[in-house]
Length: 118
Image (cartoon, rainbow, N blue to C red):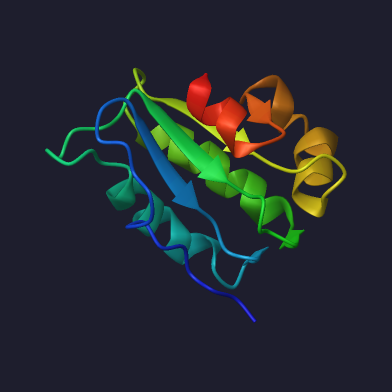
């Protein structure tokens, strides 16, 4: 079963915006998630943050559509907005990020506190 992210979950309106992604990211939901993430990547005053943190710690399944989703988010946000990803070491999401080489282009953190402090 696939659950959409809740872009209203904890947000820091100053510099970081945190979005938790669903337990599954695949072709059935990746397209719909893109708009939700881009619209959720706004600070309280409607501006884009300096850092968008995508939390994949609850994501148990992710295929290449998840990688494409992250790349599309990076492409659609202003260049000044950095995208950070949080994925547990050894998790499916973490392994997909490693195998596809996305870790070279996007900072991937092992836990949320590290990503939010970066």
